[in-house]
Image (cartoon, rainbow over all chains, first blue to last red; front, side):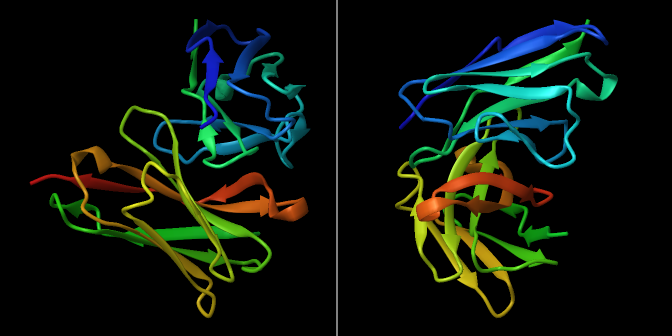
Length: 107
Length: 122
C-alpha cells in the first residue's frame, strides 16, 4: 500500500495568514493526488484533484502543487471558515489511501 | 446536481452484518465508479472499495474477505455489506462518486453522501 504522511499534523494560525500543508507519498504517484477539507460532523469536501486542479466552487485562495512523492496544499489569507481538518488522498494505485490529516486551528 | 443519499442500520451486535445503501439522485449512474469510505470516531479516512454500473469491483485488501459491494442500476443505487463486524468496525460510513479518467483510473471523489454512523456493541 502507498503510505501518505502529512505534516504538520496540527497547525495553529490566524485569520489572514498563509499556511502550507505537505503530503509525502511512500512511492511515486505521478499527479494522482487530491486534497479534502472536513469540518466536524460533515463529509469531506473536495478542494483539489490531480495535484493542482481546483474543484469547481472552491475559492481561489486554495492551491495545490507537487508531483511524484511530495505535494503541498497552500491556503492564502486564511478565512474563519477554513479552520478544519485537511486530508490528502492518493488515487495512483489500489488500495486508495489517505493521509492521517492535518488539523488547522485558530491561534 | 448529483446528490448521494445513504441509509442503513446504525447499531449492530458483534458478528452481525453491516448493510448500507446509497442512492444517486440527479445524475448519470453509468460512467462512474461508486465507492464506500469509512472513518472511525476521531480518526482518519479508510477506503473500503468501489463498484461501477456493470458490477466491476475493487476492494481494500484489509477488508476484502468480509466486504461485498453490489449495484442496482434500475434504482441507481449501490450497497455495502460487511460481515462479521466487531467493535473495530464502528465508524461513520460514507458513499461517494468516483470520477474516472483514461483507462477508468480514478480521478476524484465527489460528491459524498451525508455519512452514516454505525456502532458495533454488545
